[in-house]
Image: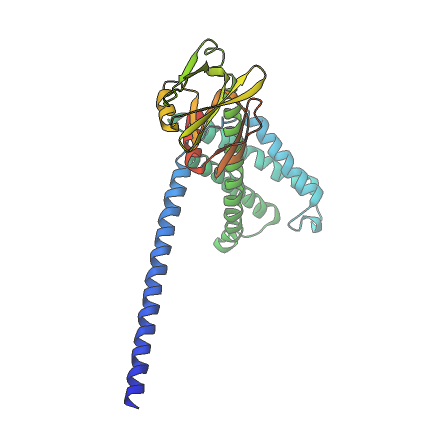
Length: 315
């Protein structure tokens, strides 16, 4: 009996140690994930926001106001359908407030403040868009209380403000993310004509390290991409109207070092180097891109590690 009790106590202690070890392990994993998430978010928010701010804030403000009027008058949400008065005038009042808020906020923040900031980053844009949404919501709330004679209390004010903030964060993330990625694609496509004309007569030489190897000399504008293949590299370039591949006995790192003075040669993957001036298509997001170059049908990956460098390169 005593032996059974001792055996039971040992099992309980073992279970306690196991549970304690699992808790420590899970806590460590959770803290590590939080640290990784914080670093990733800070890295994203600190990137340069390359999308140009609109210089037509009055026109854009009128468009926003017209959209608000259309939604309120045609759809009549928020109980407006049961309103006995002039619905068109009420909708026009909210549209006018929205227009004035957009115009004033746009001139103060996006026009004046943005000029004083040396480098406009993603977090600047995110805070500015979220501030605009809150500013419009507060002004329309005050108009609502005035038109419908509701008392302005803290509880009544915080209730719609909470939902505005929640929806505003989602709208801000979507709008900033879409504009940022669209701008990246546009800048990437602009590289097609950046230095092609300047390098018309420029040639590059890639050395073959084998005993009987022949070095490859080609015009830099004809180079499409270079792929690492074990102890060799495959150089793909345009010959006439068709892409041609030549295998050389060398390493990709040696090729990158040889071509370090060519600004348009960019390593986008641990196994690929591309000529950005010959990019004809770029599809993807912050997790990676797929590039097409010249007449080649081979899709070149831009790994997640190199996406940030590519964005800094083209920003």
